[in-house]
Amino acid sequence: MDAFSSSFISTLSPTTIIPKPILTPSSCNYISRLNISSVRIEDKPATQITSASTTTQSPSTPVSTTTTSSAGPNRRVQPTVPTMIFNAFDDIINNFIDPPLKPSVDPRYVLSNNFSPVDELPPTECEVIQGSLPPCLDGAYIRNGPNPQYLPRGPYHLFDGDGMLHSIKISQGRAILCSRYIKTNKYMAERDAGSSLLPNVFSGFNGLTASAARGALSAARILAGQYNPANGIGLANTSLAFFGDRLYALGESDLPYAVRLTSNGDIETVGRHDFDGKLFMSMTAHPKIDPDTKETFAFRYGPVPPFLTYFRFDSDGRKQPDVPIFSMTRPSFLHDFAISKKYAIFADIQIGMNPMEMIFGGGSPVGTDPNKVPRLGVIPRYAKDESEMRWFDVPGFNIIHAINAWDEDDGNTIVMVAPNILSVEHTMERMDLVHALVEKVRIDLKTGLVTRHPMSARNLDFAVINQNYVGKKNKYVYAAVGDPMPKISGVVKLDVSKGERQECIVSSRMYGRGCYGGEPFFVAKEPDNPEAEEDDGYVVSYVHDEKSGESRFLVMDAKSPCLDIVATVKLPGRVPYGFHGLFVRKNDLDKL
Image (cartoon, rainbow, N blue to C red; front, top):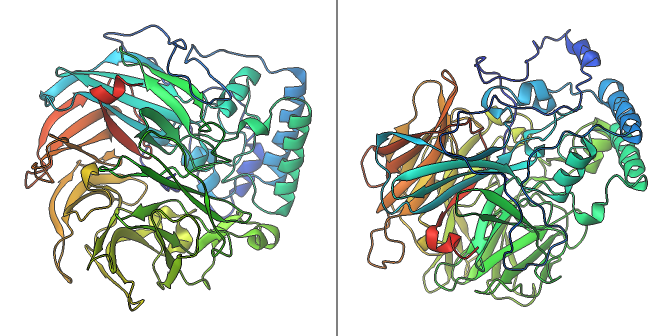
């Protein structure tokens, strides 16, 4: 997720696929008639200007995989008799034991408008309708996000969708869009079965009775040979990372999935990657890549000790030994972290595993603890064990994403910039009530004093920087404007070098009435030029017009006072709202 969202009601548009219920205090009995079947959701096919044939697995650099798969055409599979019997029991659970009463897990509410899924789109040429694409945009912008393969049979949270990549490959001013599912083991098993097989992680375990019922049904499916959980249950729906000359689709509940782009712009899944058996269980969807050393720093977290494990990859992508962190004494929701040149910084926030709420309150196993004091953990970047790990209490500081961190005062002070989630108790179910305040935090390692101050009063998250400044002092941040989250109405540029009690927004671009985008991404004009100015480049994002139903790709001048649009690309297919992305340059694409 990485990436957080909740349900919201928005104006019905032509792209709405799932009807929205009218919710009143007395209308919850409509749930008993939910009975949503496992059928595929599709958009009408886009008119193709130039398309490529369906992809097949091509010989690529061997990786450690448990599965390799092609991106072949969708197959319509008639569920077997055992599958239909299991689905009948699933319907009983979904309609009578644990119906989706809350809007945050009602699929007809969550999957409305441009959150509704789309079908795969083969490589299709796009039309540049405004300006021209800059020559430095030679490569591909790829964004990840949830896109359920089947209509949910019961409760559904936005985090639960199968991962789909939306890639716009740019070369010599031309653009080609392609949308493909990441062929995870879960996706392939359910595609072959013609039905969803596993309960949704974020929405399927609300209360002891529902958890026991879905757990028993899942066990029965496994015993019947419908699915092998040893192959992973992840969705790979959160982000992407390029390191060790490989491109990975990431979701923090599983191992990375290696993917590649073909010369014609198609997307192929290479396979689940365990780094020669050295990576276990899972990995964060937000690894940090040092632009100077080319090392990659990452972690995993889980519900059993050690609740946090830190590790890194060398510049060739070889995994180094784990560093278990036993000083984290209870499971916490660790979605992101930060690195400086000397340290890795982790946030132990008020969101964590909450089994008592699930058992006695009928809630999700992931929840908030208002009595917990948030804290920041600091460990040397190259630590071999946790002996030098230090924790600092920071009351009221709950971060989901970290923007950047750096060292000051000869390494005696760490500065971190991150959005602080206010009203954190609403994060999982009512993100429209959450306000994210970008703050600058200073950790004095000598005195143990932690100070913080806000950089802006706006509701900002999904922020990025020039990737050449990861772990180093930077000046500019590009952040998405929540209106409210998870809808993003524009992007702002902040100057984080400004002093306290100053508004740090120096430029902004709002998308217009009824238009919403996603996480922005900064692409430097000259990434290999050490003399280039930090903000000399472009900010890119997908934007959707809910009135016309059209999706577009915007390129904005990062140095201009209003983030001027230098190019607009009309997309041949709808791109749903999603999570995180990145720009991969042609010379890196050629290595895949």
